[in-house]
Length: 274
Image 1 (tube, helix red, strand yellow):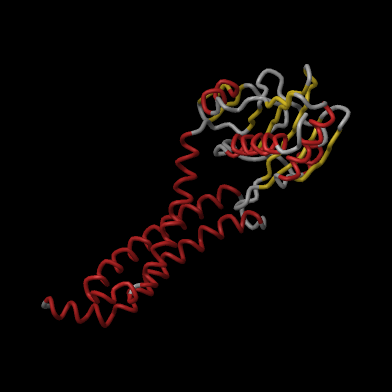
Image 2 (image 1 turned 90 degrees about the vertical axis):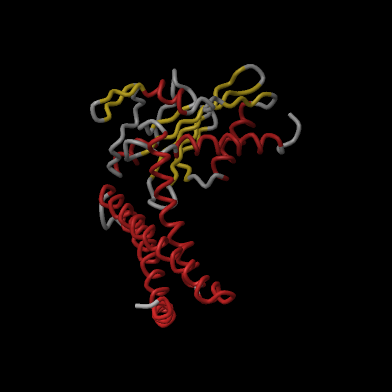
């Protein structure tokens, strides 16, 4: 087939190739989305959901590459009209790239953080759960509520406090100086509510808050306990965030504690002078 004939064939089949490439990318994205939706609806287990996610990301990646090739070819075939002729392919490229990148970035994050799921600002005396225990038992949480200083992952024994120190050295207690213990508690509770956590217990006299939160995509539930300890002219706030299921939290619990402390600092700053 001559070059002119090849170009003519591509022009005739262009729309079909564009739609096919877009369909592959969209299918992969849909499969990736369904992996989390199916888990949230309890249609399949966590392991199967992650398998579906990998397949979806792979299909979306292939579709994105096909859309990129089609876009490049369109630019050569149609010159100034290349973009308009391949707008659907460009959309498929964006969808495919996004559906591939999100699971890929999750995998990269998982490989860069330790396989732990219990993060606390106080490694010596972590806040303990009380009100959450019944909820965790009712939901068949596979992870223990008690703080484990050593966990076995495969053939390795992980020292949890040391692993946290190496991975998240910034996770430290927050100090609320210059305000009373009860004012500090009110700020801590307001920050938890503003984070969107579901509050299970709030004991102002003891300075304790227990709550849970759910991840956006898969709906994994993590439990939190906030503890205020009077000290000097203020209080020390400790937070602990624990996943109910899964060996690794992919850094989510540390991320949540950081976000909570940032929220607490902002609320203290704008709550007025001590």
